[in-house]
Amino acid sequence: MNYQDIIGHKIEIESLQRAVKKGHISHFYLFEGEKGIGKMTTAKVFAKHILCRSQNSESPCGVCASCRKFESGSHPDYIEIAPTNGIIRKNEIDNIKKQISFSPFESARKVILIDDADKMNKESQNALLKILEEPPSYINLILISSNTKLLLNTILSRAEKIHFKPINASDMVNFLTNKENIALDRAKLISDYSQGSIGKAFDLIKSEEFILLRDDVLKLVDYCIFGRDYMVFEMSENFTKNKEISENVLLILLLYLRDLFIYKSTQSELFLINKDKIELIKKHSILEFDKINDIIEKIYYTKESIDLNVNKELLFEALFFSIQEEY
Ligand SMILES: [Zn+2]
Image 1 (cartoon, rainbow, N blue to C red):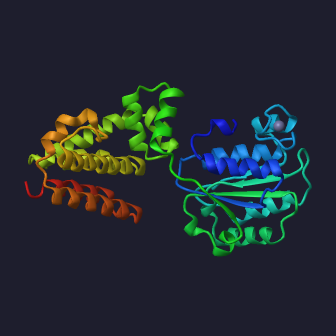
Image 2 (spheres, helix red, strand yellow; image 1 turned 180 degrees about the vertical axis):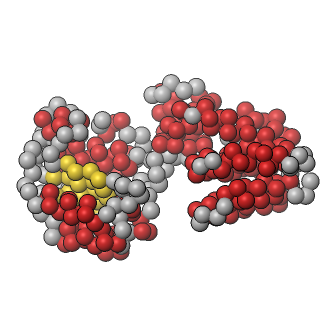
Image 3 (tube, rainbow, N blue to C red; image 1 turned 30 degrees about the vertical axis):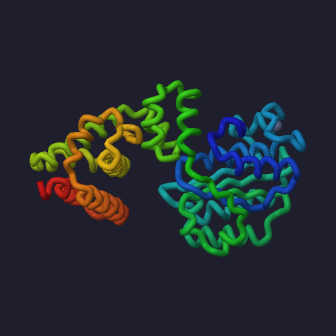
């Protein structure tokens, strides 16, 4: 794995490469941005680069003892932690503190990477703060977070922040067509549904289930619009089996309604995401703009309520019934 394997984030990567090349690496980085857009991949290549033995290089060399140990997951100066059961506890931070008290073994530096750093509870964050107050000179710490609101201000203020933006659609489509050999139409569909998250795109590539789920969701929309709303009870049960499915259902609905809106406004297929569903989109254009907006509002409401652990089945039933209501 090297910098050129990362999709997008060109400016951010160049600044990291410069830092290593010039030897101006910060002690403490925060990689922030949404899930699945490449923060972790970038952090790992950066860590490998920091530890690489060839000096002043643009990228990790890939052949030195350090690079080889890093690749095989056995580098003694690299520590990576992530939440267990959704939480990073203080004893893990204490453990890091112990490990960094020894000088590096293999490289000139030691790198600690904390994934989903916002899953540290208060005690853990305070323990980390202690480390940040007096870090050993050979330490580089990288925190990764998609929800920095949960981190203490005293931690945030100390970090050099690298902000990762969602990957733009053309980079994503290029990657999917060139590297993953996916046909252009499908690549565009995956790109639109993954909304800049390469992690999500990979999930979608693997998942025929997603395509079937989309068929089901749109079928139920059709039933609701044309008065067969009793199907809601039968079908929405499948939409609430787990959080991932529920989130996908809402995303499918949202992007479908976006298409309806655009098609009604432009009467053109050009900007549609669900181009393959054009016949259905035409048929459903009978929904008024206000109605479409109304349903979109309800989707956002449903999404927020799910995050607050409100009963998913009731929420989905209410959502789909709202599509039917006036017809
Ligand atoms: Zn190397």
